Image (cartoon, rainbow, N blue to C red; front, top):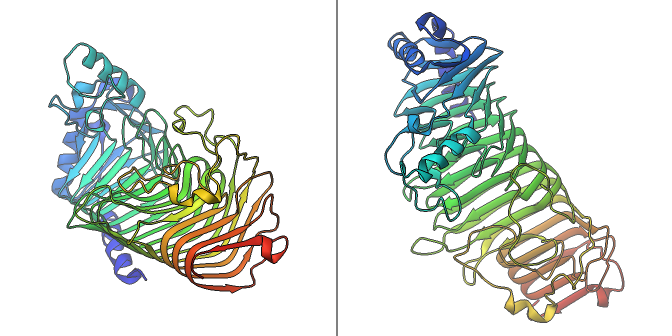
Amino acid sequence: MLPKILLTLALLAPLAAAAQRKNLTITTYGAKGDGQTDNTVFIQNALDEAAAQGGRVVVPAGRFVTGPLLLPSHTELHLDRGATLLGSTHRLDYGTQKLQTNALLTAVGQQDIAITGQGTIDGRGREVVQDLLALLRADRLQDPEWQVKRPLENSRPFIVLFANCRQVRVTGVTLKDAACWVQVYRDCSDMKFDSIKVQSTAYWNNDGIDLVDCQRVALTNSTFDAADDGICLKSENLHSRCEDISIRNCTVRSSASGFKLGTASWGDFKNIRVDGLKVYDTFRSAIALEAVDGGKLEDIDIRNVVATNTGNAIFLRLGHRRGAAPGVLRRVYIGNVKAEIPLNKPDKGYELEGPVFKEAHNINPSSIVGLPGHPVQDVTLENIDLTYVGGNSPAVAHRGLDSLARVPERAPGYPEFSMFGELPSYGFYTRHASNITFKNVRIQTKGADYRPALLFDDVQKLTLQKVTVPTAPTQPTLVLNDVVGVTRQQVSLPGAAKQATLVRGHK
């Protein structure tokens, strides 16, 4: 359970302080909302004065161009309805050092800071990237990968970057079109996000929000349309963690995954709760839990998720990409999930679609996959309803039940649901896991598939309670391969019992 009382008290403190703040309107400092004037100095002067007296800097209706700004402690940046902060389109305004770029809004080591209101912060990422590319072609900036793939993330500015900050609020505002990650919070604590909107499909790596090694965070009532992961928690510090984070009532459209823990997972993730998530038109997974860099990912509670037109529903992966030894992925509860998985690419037609898969394969199942000797542990899936459109064929790709041992481990691979290529089941695939419970789980396909619905391989202690597969385009429907300790109660599979279930190895 999250320490709700402590979290509430921590978040209320800056609210009380905000009520006493003096309003400082940027136009009184010389700012002009004409969409052309560079207002960086005027706005920074207002912020610096606000810091001295605990003030609120107000951006009125208008279009105010600005370069990078620093938010000092005890400062609130408030955007009135109709107000827009336009990030400079000149890449050099964000710094000239090699592979080091300032964000549009930065705070480092500050406390009691806020971004509020009903206005918009527009990073104008398309224009910034075009200017960056022109500078790279002219050899005025250097980047080792821009001609191979795209400019590195360190070459492109975020909209928001807060690091080592306490008592942070971001409410009401719209964040639009970053050149890289939209908003990044590193090693921050006691944070509240409410009713924010992210509309950022300007360029690659447009994560909607990244919480990196943060503690005591509440994210509620927010919407994300992002050209990368929607809501993403990361750990980049071996000695730090993401902990006591609550996410509630959010909507995500993503060219990658909707809600993700990882990929960066040097440190730990603990006490993460998600309640009420809508995911739609999303390329990768609605839910992705990925521990691949040696950290621990544990005590995760995810409930009430509806995913439509999504490439994958649930993906749990323990890998070994970096770190002295594999980490830990355990104590996960996922409940009340309803997902529909189409046959075709779910983000087709978006400005920046997810990549085309390198290897041909049919629709991937949801999956729980660990490593030999390092299982994913203690996972409960309850009230899960997965519907696949179907239409899969061995002519596209084929991995039969005689080739289970040839499913690649890919321990150091980048974690994503398609990393194993063709998998030998269409609904759910579980390998290298222990103490796995499926309770009131329903899996169905509306079309053809040559694979079974459920496959468990190298699993210790498996509980199947009220598991239903209403139709079977092929038999067997359930495969237990090298599974030790199976409990089955009210498992409903089509066809004769001997045909519906295939058992190999232990039972």
